[in-house]
View (cartoon, rainbow, N blue to C red):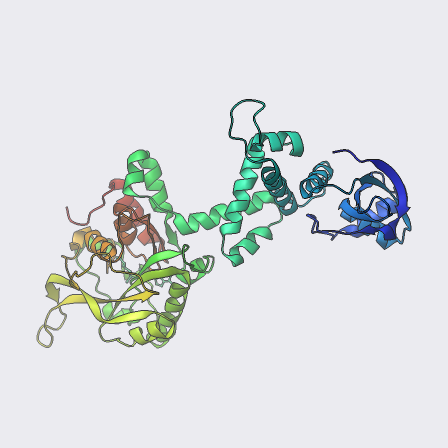
Amino acid sequence: MKPTKVITTSISNIRFGDRARIDYDDIDALAETIQKHGVIHPIAVQQIDPDKEEYLLVAGGRRLTACLKLGLKTLTVNVYPPDLTDLNKKQIEAIENFSRLDLTWQERVNLENLVYQLEVEEKGEKVSRTPDGEGVTKKSVAENILKKSASHLADNIRFKETIDKLPENLKQAVLNCKTQKDAKNLVRKIFKQTSLSISAREAEERPIEKVHKLLISSYNVGDFFEGVSDFPDGQADFGYNLLEIDPPYGIDLDKNKKMGDGDSQKIGMMDYVEVPRDEYREFIKKVAVESYRVLANDSWLILWYDVKKPWIADILEEVGFNVRRIPGLWIKPSGQTRAPHLHLANCYETFFYASKGNPSISNRGRSNIFNFSPVIAKEKIHQTERPVELIQEVLTTFIDPSSSKARIMVPFLGSGNTILAAANMNMAGVGWDLSENFKNAYTDRVLNGEIPYKSYS
Ligand SMILES: C[S@@+](CC[C@H](N)C(=O)[O-])C[C@H]1O[C@@H](n2cnc3c(N)ncnc32)[C@H](O)[C@@H]1O
């Protein structure tokens, strides 16, 4: 498409239209250049009516804005005919703008997508393989109009689709990145956080080093609250499907220094970070709020709790969970007590299960009793370690392992066995613990084993 004429006209005859360029920020610098050198490259306009001197801006919004700012009265313009289609206009704008270097990356990506869309709308997508077949391809649009490679356009179309699917707050964070490289890194980070995983099926297809690397990077050393703050809000088809929470217990550690027997002392109580008793309610509330936030709609929460703290269920309800008041029970074949003359040996632990929305239990009708032996003391890497097999059973009770890959978040990892159980079940796990030593012990376990991981030999 070529201009029909080049004329000098009054600036008041030119109207702005709907334009791709959105950033008029650094207009002063351009105005200064125009004042010194004039408008070197004429702006492009469309004549609205062949009999009238009225024009619509097609390309050159920044130059026109700078001229208005300078108070110029006339301007030399390239005039295009009234019958320009939307596609023609965008093509002219694209060609104009792509030949310039001052588009932001956001404008460039939008414009490329738009030109491709308009081309497909007008000419259809090419299906025939013959060279003169009708329609356009990414390659033809990229090379003939945008003067870019086909892979560049395909990448940017995919990138825009990815950004558009993000929840609004994340989309804005990506669009606020200074460069497209930063934006791509951020998108990568977001997806790493939300779907970092290894599954049994994938493991078969990958070299074992990669499986190990992925499992190790799923264990973050750090504070849950700090880590989770980077994670997006859950939505209908985005977010976590289950959170397994085994929080610190809000007890006085000095009185409970005993960790177990023999080798388990190698990672001592020093590594186990507790929460002061008087801050415990506040702590649980914060955990509940963040958990509810990152869960997808229709998802599950499993929260291990001490039967002496039933008020935890009230807090879960307060933040929006539907709590089943009759808990799940992990029953061990034998129990322990430090005062056998006063107490029976306790051989059970309890978890509340609660839902956000209305998910269904995968293993319908299963009893709430989970009979599993504890991990034997000399194999333990964490004082309150749950066996992989128990967690696996809990996960698959609530989530169907054959459905598309589920995401599990584990705020307080300890041994990290929940990530291993998730991996065994083709689910993606991610989590935190404050202790580097626990992670090191987990890393040894990952490196010395393979999927399916086991706690009982
Ligand atoms: C009850 S244990 C979890 C045990 C785990 N279920 C297992 O199977 O090994 C709780 C863990 O939370 C960790 N922790 C305490 N405060 C934390 C925080 N703010 N962020 C991350 N981890 C924390 C403790 O170091 C402890 O290892």
